Structures are given as C-alpha cells and as structure tokens.
Length: 78
Image (cartoon, rainbow, N blue to C red; front, side, top):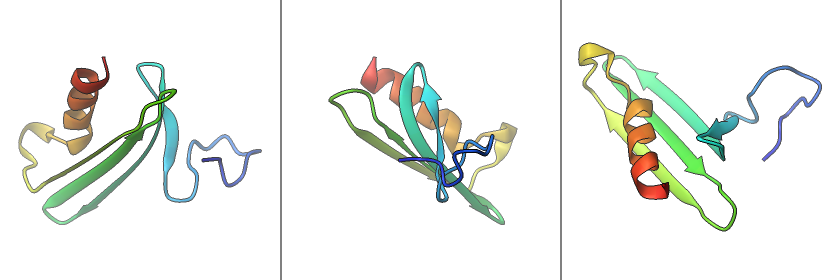
C-alpha cells in the first residue's frame, strides 16, 4: 500500500485511507448513501491481518460504522 502522490500531504491512496490505529498500520475505506453507511478496515500489524467490515442504516446518535470497527479491533488485536 502506498500513496498515489507521495509528495502530497494527503493520507489517501487509491480509494483507501492509509494510517494507524493504536500504533498498528491500517488501510480503510468509508462509503455512504442516503440512509446507510459502510466502513472497511484492514489491520496490518506485523505477522497478522484482520479485515473488519461494518454496514448500518442507523444514524441515531451519530453512530458510524468506523466507531464499531475501532471497538472490535481493540478487542480482537489487543
């Protein structure tokens, strides 16, 4: 995984955001349409891989799939 334009300050590759969560490298992608949200994250710590996808049509309390993925990742990886 690498940035499309390394000279850019953008954290985005080809449709994937590159970053870290709790010190582990991740790539992720979000999407939405009227009334629904999706989020896919691939955790890439050394020697492990974890892919989590969350989809919802509930926007109550600004509830987003990325928050659920954070919680699942913390339980599974740590």
